[in-house]
Amino acid sequence: MEFFVEFYETREGRCPVQEFLDDLKASDPGDFAVIVSGLAKLRHRRCHREPLSRALGDGLLELRHVGKLNTRLFWFFLPARRIVAVHGIRNKGRDIPIRDLATARARRVDWLGRHPA
Image 1 (tube, helix red, strand yellow):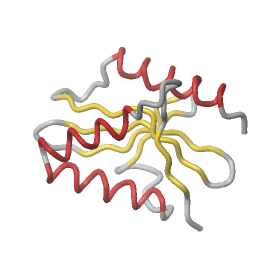
Image 2: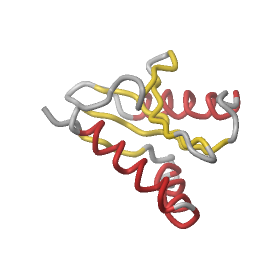
Image 3: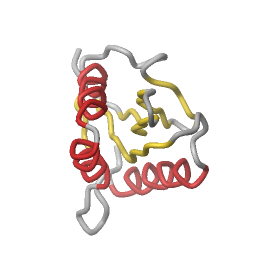
């Protein structure tokens, strides 16, 4: 059973997750490779739970990689085996900044409002 992974797009057509991944690839190719590998594991229904993924509440989950900087990609499930990635961050701390969590949740709500299941 394979899942389809897609990235959130703004109303203007920007893709913040792709921009995040492009920046990550340029700045830290090793962490980029780990995140891309994690996305492949999600697509093939491996590691939908800890330690690679963790539920954050309100239907939002995170794909995470711990390194010099913690790399996190926020996502959610949809029917028909779909995963939508909505936001990515890198930070030094273990806690997720409140504004990044708010951004991820707002993008989930926006996406669901524009793409009824």
